[in-house]
Length: 67
Image (cartoon, rainbow, N blue to C red):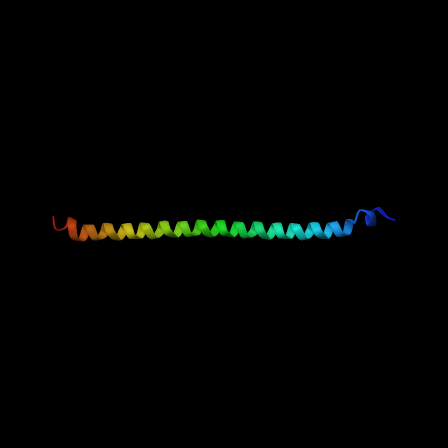
């Protein structure tokens, strides 16, 4: 009997490759979630800045000019 057969090298290699594939897919999914969270936060900051600019413009138009 060969050592390769005795220690089931081929079967273990196939199992290891399958598990590494699962780990790789999971890591990619987590990375994508983190990137999406970062993008969403950045979009929120941009919207808040636009709202602040609009409010400042409205203040200048109606309150500052009236005084």
